Image (cartoon, rainbow, N blue to C red; front, side, top):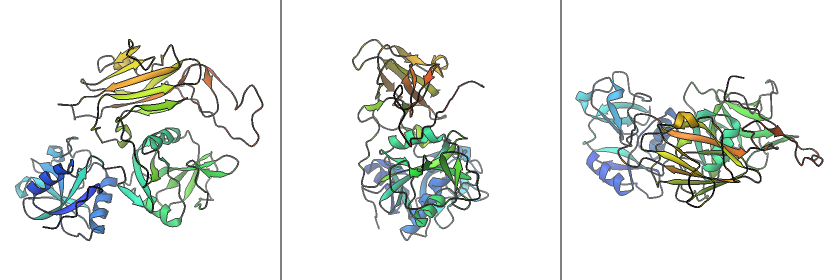
Length: 413
């Protein structure tokens, strides 16, 4: 038996049978790998090939009916394979075995019997922290479209990362290759324009790959997946996928092991929200402390879908006072897109999430904006009726300083 398991690897390979896979993965705090997107499937196939493995790979999918992915269940208990699968035509075939394995050279899945000696990929709960590595950096593709300003906040919550910066033709090609879903034609990147081009993560501008035939349309940039060229876009244009990037040496704070603090304005998300298919597995409740510099703090739930065993409590201080609101599945429609104002400059949000016998048939989570009710300055977000002002107002604004203002409404106009 050959084992390549390592406690530092997120995806690991061993040669044995299914019973050993399950017990061995469990000993690492994980399970046989589950695959919910084409990006993950491509990365896992590449990982297996990179380990010098060309034989079949047992994955964490079990099927109970012929030709029906909806009757194939994932080991991570996040539903069935109807939303995404990569079966060979004519599969699954229950008569061939309830297990499913992948051929690394093609990434295709077929039915079989993992009780035979095969290789397997084990996934720990840490998958996603550095699943994609190039040089000294980690990358995480966000296949779900978000607006550019949302992605800045999402990436910051992922190991204090940033929207991807690109510093060589090789890195540009690596990033382009992470997206193989034909429906994804472009992604947002961290390149921005003020008086000159710069990267939002503050790294040196030492490489560029502009499409010079495109129309200059704004202060942000996207990459075409077709040819890797960069195009100017309006920062508030249609949402698009992106990639978050951070140093591999960074020590990632595990969401919810300690309170999350945020200042001024921005977004916060339920754990796992930005991973799309990933159900949060960790400590509950989760604490968020939001503080604004003056006036009263305001929070606005832009996305809100709680299961029957979860709730959100909002407080105006960090103590155990009476909550200003308690949100449940029963009253969440009332609080959706409704600004909630704290009598103080602080909001403490306590997210109590379902921990056992949870409903896994749908995606549950929330996204919230926070800020103040006095208006917005440069770099802040206006949530309710208010005013906007230039940088340093009422004093003179600084020289050579660019500032964009975005107006967003939950209604039609």
